[in-house]
Length: 203
Length: 220
Image 1 (cartoon, rainbow over the protein chains, first blue to last red):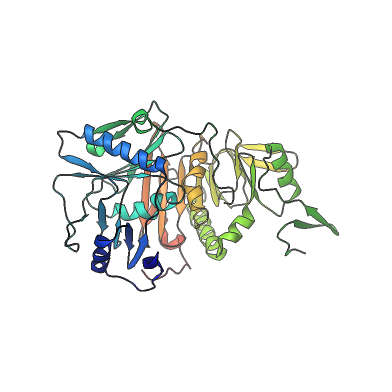
Image 2: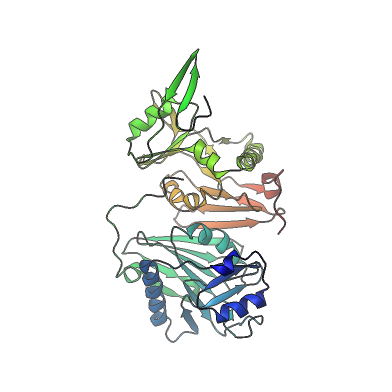
């Protein structure tokens, strides 16, 4: 990827100009432009299934789910991201730095489907950056290897309530948007290997 | 002799004893693992569902181990000072801990036990703690995925474990996971040197300034 190998740093406006003309997706991270890796078919299917389940469950409410083409600006950490699914409630707050109007700043809920290459970032640095968004209330992490969903809900004292929903009979409660999401729906078309795969033994 | 990466050597009363390294692709029983642990007191191995991982090698491969060691020492000092005189105490990363299913034996960076310690005893490998109250892991790039994901998942199987604490090396950040009696967890992110992490399981505040004392972070 030519962009990624260049050593120069970019302004957010330059990034928007490049990105809005690009056929590939890149994230902006404080001056750097990084190509986004493609996900597995399973990853894409789980993301789409959740988006579709949220779309029907949010009918009649002032909230809408968006797919992984939605770009979000994280002003404090000076980066952009394309979450797997984002939910916005009420009016969209557009990033004024992106004149094309393709970048928003006010997600209430974000879903990330975990994969081995991005899980550490999703749980660590990316979650930390999301926490700086004032409108951000709930973070939903979805496993690909077993039926498991984790939700983090922002509390008034600065902590987050963490819940685990495990097994196909479980129902994840997405409290910030008052939606119940059965894992049987999320994983309806997913088959799991019978033996649970081991974490990377190379440590 | 000690430079060899493939095999471990130990000096034992005038003899140099060679211990065989674990084969990465073989599956071991717990008994085989504990025999290896007993035979190589110089090394620390983790047992993970049939696999054996040399923790010293893993740490060396992560690079820059001095910061990891300093942060770990700072955590132990800060916790130790605050726990002094109470029913809880902090152990260094030479303490081996197991989970009830016996699919994980590992050496957390720091472990806090309150009240009576419970051990499983092995004739050669010695004691393994089974009732930690709090576990601290200092993150490094090569272990972050494991510490945040599968290892935390395994640790959650320990009933006595009420709190899990992750400490960053690359920025002043501490994350705590506190288990409520009625189920559910509280996640507490603490960022920046003026912050103090609230360890609810110990009723202790851990100032980040003490944890990251002596660590220089790259300018933001």
